[in-house]
Image (cartoon, rainbow, N blue to C red):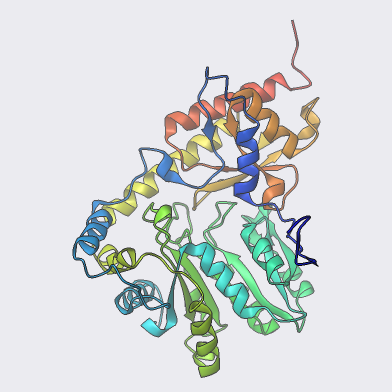
Length: 417
């Protein structure tokens, strides 16, 4: 094997940017020999790096109990343990006008694997998928491996990052297999209203395509709109709901996700469709069996106080972000976050004298200030910045102070003495 070829066959590797890939490059650009300052990363949505974010004792004890029971050391069914599927069906049904069954639920290794399953099930020659811009780049990467054509519709910052439904209608055709919605929004921090979600469902039904609802940040809402699952509109349009324990329970490393057919009209209950999904899961490796076994206890026994504490910290952190961003002349936040763990900031290059674009900004910021922020190009918006606010308040204040110093130092108005 050499030059990307195997046995003389040239293998194409997708050129897509990934968040982890560009964050690794940013970290590598920092001079590790300079230990005068700590690195503060506002790039990866992993709150476990900060002591103010930790999971509930209920979750920890459920995992320990499952492990120590000595009953869950073997293989689980490839679609997931029956009790885990049933517990997730009951958990999601709390917010739906109908009841999901355990047969609607398939256990995945995190939400990322659920994304791959969804696109694998829908891929066919000539098919296309509609993705939000900005969005989560794993969708583009999965689509590239599946030879699915990607068509982007814009999210509108002036309308709270709502979907441009006119653009969706213009982009879709008879080969469109799905419309992807991320709610609460990553990377924008938006939470869609009931009315807007209903319009999305009606548009998808009109276009005769299904909706993939990425709800990995489900229930992490702290603004005027409560979280409404897309599955509420499953009677209008078939919905594939993707989610996980990762964000709400602050356990991204446990890799416990789900792929759910939220479809009371029964399109996904077609025996051939069910068999196709089950066979695909036969080639996947799901989460550890003892983690799956802990899920029923985690979902049933977690106290609302735990959730409220997480929400309060996220709201406090997002408020700090927005207040400090107002003090930085070259960046602005057109929409104050109302959910998830991330926000988008617009970069005004006209105020900076030696910064060429968002990528240049982020690499120079990393080298000079030891602060990691993701360039907007990585999520589909050039000359924007994406930042996570799932960070302890002290580190957040310090990081944004460094960003302000950086911007002032590179400002066209900065006077050098």
